Length: 70
Image (cartoon, rainbow, N blue to C red; front, side):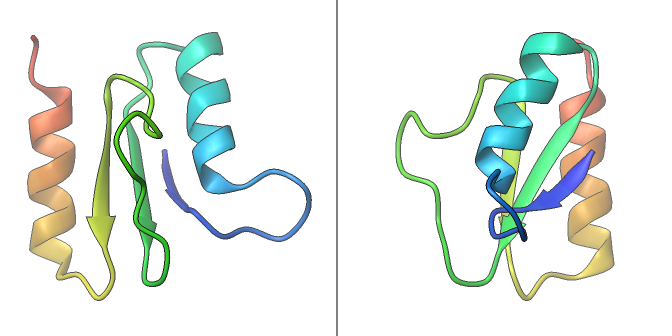
């Protein structure tokens, strides 16, 4: 799943990432933002962050790294 930290509505991307990891731990989660950088402990284990602006190859690299077995 690829989400932005800032989303319309009551849930932000960090809360969505946490909910996804808790309910479906095998789903890869990548979070992005151009204005908000998550601090230590704000990202659930097994997720990663990429700051905007990003290149498409950087997104692919992050997803590949997340998909590798631990």
